[in-house]
Length: 188
Ligand code: IMP
Ligand code: MG
Image: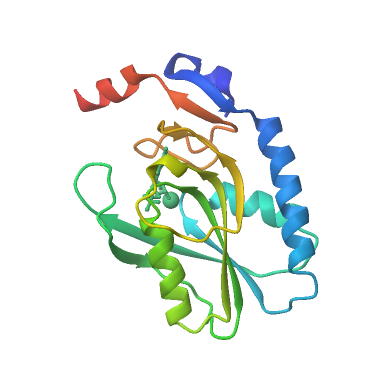
């Protein structure tokens, strides 16, 4: 889905499809270089938001690596994460002794990635490295080491390329900010 298909709902495009592609090419080249020859590398995506990111980055990487998925949720009031995280659907891979590269859509407060990093370490991963497509640095409440960042974005709610608002707009091919009227309609 392209921006013209949902023009009425969109305030502005933050990152175009071409900009996403170009940056993902760069990060994939960097990751491929940094992990060259690593037979223990495993890519992990957090469902559902990171599906586009892991698909794109893994296709652009030049090293063969397995991928796996995990679905987690954080319970809390409203849109804020509470820090209490529940695994909805777990990995099928044993991470013991593996170099794990987490692919995430966005790091906001940092609560989710802080938990996941520690959890994978607890399960015996040899190393845990993080790639996030987007980062909202101004929102961070937990400091998490993030090795690869696609783009830093301002404190605005964004959708597209996997990111949703009430499960919509994940299939938009760019990153955009919704019009406030979309949220208001939804709350009404
Ligand atoms: P954190 O635990 O606060 O870092 O939350 C990260 C998660 O919140 C992401 O994986 C997203 O699912 C969601 N999230 C945070 N900001 C946005 C946004 O601007 N648009 C869509 N989802 C977001
Ligand atoms: Mg997410």
